[in-house]
Amino acid sequence: GSESRPIGPHEQSTVVDLPDDLCFVVAFSGARAEKGGDAQQGYNDAAELARIAATMLGKDTLAEAIADERRRRGGRNDVKDVLSDAIRKNHGTKSSAAPFVERFEQFYDESVCLVPLTAYALSTRNYVLLGKVVDASHRRAVNMLRNQIEETAWLALWARGLENDLQVNNHLQLSVRAPTYQDHSCREGARITALAASAFGAGFGGSCWALLRKRDAEKFARQWQEAYDARFPLEDRRTREFFVTLPGRGAFEVRVEV
Image 1 (spheres, rainbow, N blue to C red):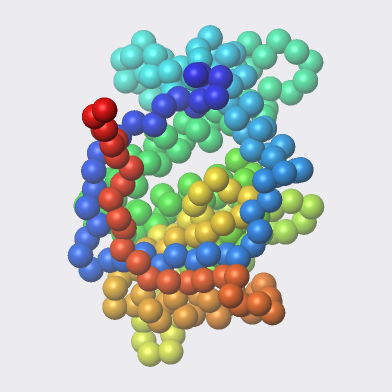
Image 2 (image 1 turned 180 degrees about the vertical axis):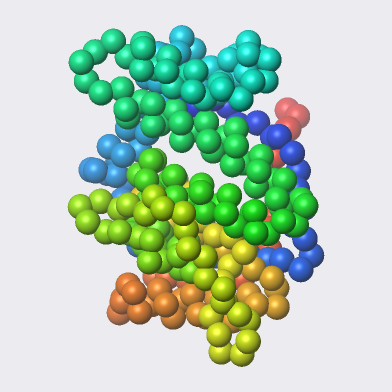
């Protein structure tokens, strides 16, 4: 039901083949993914903020609110601002509307802007654009969804040469300034930088992926794990894993006749 899916149902928008010369390196952080206590509250907050924001817009889901407003405005590019203002107007209490606006804007940016841009950049092999778009997505997960731990936030940043952007105080925060990209060459012994990298999964633990040219993948995986082990020392190395892989088939429907 809509109460459990406040952002809306998943939809397939396009299919993009991974170029033959690319592969993924996956880092399993080994950090325990907490599902209770503060983490459980974090999960619930993200869903509840989305649900309430959709209700303020008079819809069951954020996806429905965005789709309806885009149709109403004939494709104009002010939909995000219009809906953000509507949430502020309809908030109706003395408490701040900022958390609901922020949750809506994160969802809008991810689903309307970043996901289509990622597909476009990969399909056209524009890897500079791809890296920057995925960086923006990861940055919003840390700063706005707040569903990352220090390990997963750091892993994606190191893969891109941006680890100095991470600030750890009472909570994780990525610098809001434009990322400073390093020009890492691929000469023997030099550090390799991923074309794109991000944490993935439900958050509060888990893994990160990095996109590499196949010729660099094994060396990058070793560098990535060595840097991670140095940054987050752990006696039992068996609880973390870095490996090279290719994508499998995406999610698909299975029909069973009975």
